[in-house]
Amino acid sequence: MKAPFCGDTVNSRPFTLLVVDDSQSTLPRLARALGPEDFALRIAAHGPEVPRLAQEVSLVVLCPGEDAAGTLALLERLTPGDGALGPPVVLLTPPEHRPLWVEALRRGAEVVFDPWAPDELLSRVHRALAVHARMEALATQVGELQRLSATDGLTGVHNHRHFQERLREEFRRAQRYDDALSLILLDLDFFKEINDKYGHSAGDGVLRAVAGALTRGVRETDLVARYGGEEFALLLPRTHFTGALTVAERVRRELRALTLDVDAGLQVTASLGVSSFPHRTVLSPEQLLLTADEALYQAKRDGRDRICLHPQLPMGPSGT
Image (cartoon, rainbow, N blue to C red):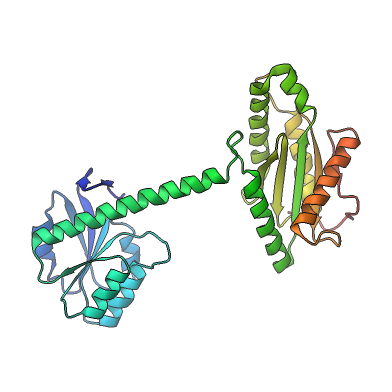
């Protein structure tokens, strides 16, 4: 477990540093400069196992090996530059190894010229840890913002915008690999009456309960989204329409069986429309959505609490 680092202060001691040095000649100087009260040092020779070991420590101190090209290749693996956030790297190198330290700087590593002063090295290590901690915090914040931007605030499932993005992505994938893709649209029956009788707060509770039931009723690879109001969408990759029918019927039954805090006697039902690709009338993500919507409104017209297929959808192979 990496120790947390905040600003320029060590919150938990010691940090573990991986020293990559074939000769191990630098280790005694490093031990004196960094001190056991702040840093625990592990030693490793240049080799293919170094990137794996680096994931277990807080920082890597890289000393050039005899093979300059091998050291450069190892530096590239430790600092991939593709957005991945690995441990920070401090390169200890003679100034004459210019191609190596220029590349290290370009990749965001700290460079300390050998021979180095202990106080300089300590400051560079602290700075590298502090910068890395800020980058990790920023990455966490960005990830949380991305999650929030794709999430419906009331129900916790995906929102309409994210659903539209995934619909286009999954449709392109299904076309490319000649795979199946199914869509279920469902609308809660008489939801306005729930709001009118019990209030909007109770209606919000029903929506959250429904979202939970939908999430439990599908696979992790499926997508549950609040399409709008009391309407939800279930996007089912690699699922033929007979498999989608199975999911739709399971969902319909689970919604009817929901136990709600609003009223023990209140029963939630939904009308569901199902459409699938491939089909001759479904040639785009918009058509998949339109045909599912047509089937949904057919279920409404036929009396609600039921499942309807896009009318031109024939029976086909089963499976999810």
